[in-house]
Length: 218
Image 1 (spheres, rainbow, N blue to C red):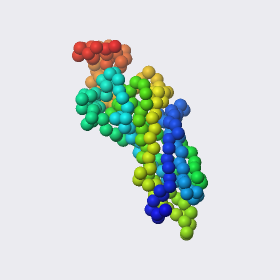
Image 2 (image 1 turned 30 degrees about the horizontal axis):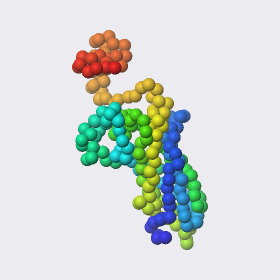
Image 3 (image 1 turned 90 degrees about the horizontal axis):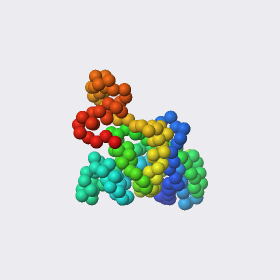
Image 4 (image 1 turned 180 degrees about the vertical axis):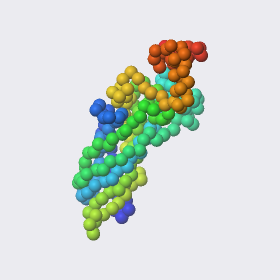
């Protein structure tokens, strides 16, 4: 083994679940880390990039319509359906020999300005194709105290997360609702329109505006 790489680490994702009691929307990935040389690992300061790879699944007509704003017409998907970064997160792995399991918190948002939220909202059934890319620092026993090595750049793990897991998490924090971030001036105009028309809710305000533009409101 070199002094800069720790090439005998292998990562896998055992499961991704929704956290029902977190203060903010959060998924938790259960990771398994294996070290095949038998050397004692004192700790790992682990960083992770979580990417969504939309090209690795199929889409029905309703999903295609929902994804139009992200990827354009289906005829363009060969060029536009590319992996994108969903989030970055980190954790500290306690000491182990051989193999260990650890939870990695995946903080989420329902902000529709975020590409990941727009993509996930458009999906119906099936799975979300995730790839987790790992980096960080491994602490081992060295000749003079601790040895320090880097997690190799090619450490990654794929996981097909059920869309239902995402929906379960969102339903726990935003039951039958969501939110859209707007500029303060736009909010003021919305409030003025609502007051002028005597509308009793924001939903009724939006429905009224859609009806006046000729859009069909379900």
